[in-house]
Image 1 (cartoon, rainbow, N blue to C red):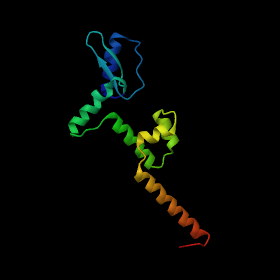
Image 2: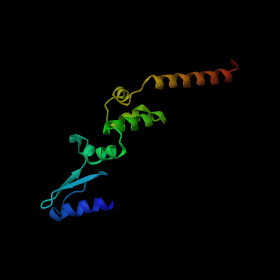
Image 3: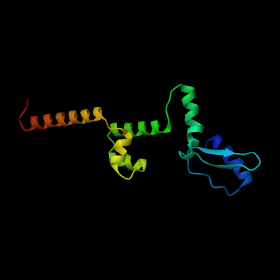
Image 4: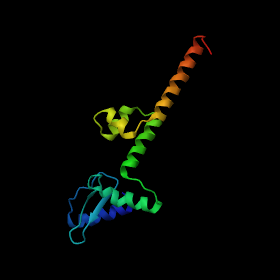
Length: 131
């Protein structure tokens, strides 16, 4: 555990010794007299307020948690990760939702057609049809 996390856990456990540590990267702790804590989540925007807003303001850039999620998915997609795998990572029920979410666009479709053309050209050269 990182130093800050150990302090949060120690503080909460000083009041609630059996408190279960969340299995998350970022956890929070509030209150001095009766400390309580938990994992930051997307719900209620606690993760946005705790981390994203601070980084965004420091960088002077406008982005959100969803911008980062979409960027992550698009990077996976462009790296060749199967859309089914990305969909599972996101917890989407179908790949159509994932395709809409990551924004497969005309550039992606053009790139796909370029790959198809290159493949077909290579195949035609193998069988002696060349260009």
